[in-house]
Length: 226
Length: 226
DNA sequence: GAAATTATGTATCATATGTTACAATTTTAA
DNA sequence: TTAAAATTGTAACATATGATACATAATTTC
Image (cartoon, rainbow over all chains, first blue to last red; front, side):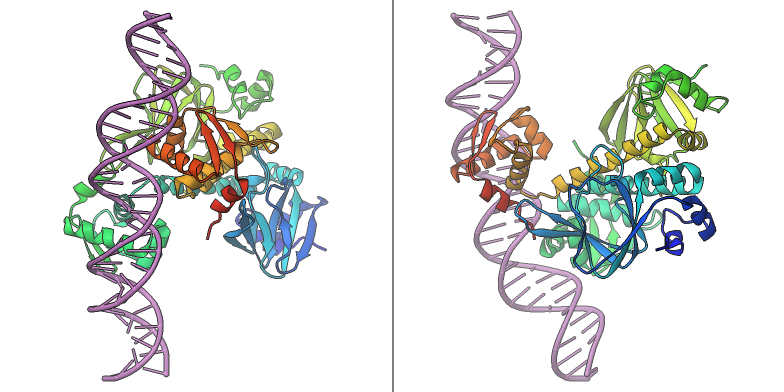
């Protein structure tokens, strides 16, 4: 079987390279292509991760099996995309989750050595790769920062201040209250209640999806930590 | 001023290379060395980050200025160490925090292009670099997993199950209850209370720093999600 | 435009955790 | 060894949020 260069060219890692460029990089290098059928395991959590995996066709899911054996879906990964780019390297280069096929799926496996070879021979791929891992780090950092806001008030204040354009004090939510509550990790009535309280205190005005900042000062003060 | 190769050789990024190897990699490449005095700003949060910074001598701190202007120390970084390796690349290549000198400090600045050049010409450095960012990602992922445990019971169960050796059911804490509470992000009395409750229910026994697992089954069940 | 569905506002109660305070115990220092 | 300091256990109360239920309002569908 041939390496599906066209699909690779569409991934974030190889973007900017032509199919020919990619073919040249891979010339003679070992690889593996394998098909999996629905619900088949592609990798197990805690498996050592020697290789770079690309979802070439179909979609897979990452699932975490917790202590009791119950399953928890973490995320869906749709082709074409690399799998767990950050887990080939690092101290604990093991899969953090089980990887399971959602449907008939094609996986391209590239040994770590080949990946390193490619990173050293294509500046574009190297930059793409570094960008991908770095973006992931930044995403996670932001997530943690957000999680560090303990109360619903803080989450709202942080969210509203971040989302509202500098020159305005009005914000149209692009998601429903329930979705926002999910995003915050709180229940919908609790979110509504806290918003109502903040409205009563004159911090902001909430009309359905339109939020108006009334007292930026106080919202800022809310976010004081320590 | 010369590049302090010896200090670089001691960083995680250049470990495994001799001083001569490093000198060769840097041969003729541009760089900057600058001294900062105590409390001087080395970089501002939101500054675009073009360069790789190394703390060659002294120590710096990362500080986050929140909306209200209050300061919050994030971490100390002691020489010799690279600074914000993950923020040179990625979507938002900006400093997430202010970088401030703790004392008289020496910073080596290497342009991004030079870093890329080096990554492409030394497999060791490339691997080190990828390992460093990847470890960071894994650290952050774990942190988030941990933060996803909502109740103190869950945190305790997760912590105890993870820390206890497979073949044993006893665990000696290597930190005080207060420190553990801080790590969990909860107050000390709350932690003590929850531990006492779990003891009453026969899940575990707590005697000062010694914790004995009495009912592994139930602890596992506690961690069921969804 | 009426009916059905979905989103939102609000209330009540239960519960987990924070806050504060103090006593009991262990560890450290004099 | 004793005094001082730090750690741990425990209690009473305050508060934030979850759970549940229902009413009201908006939106969609027919």
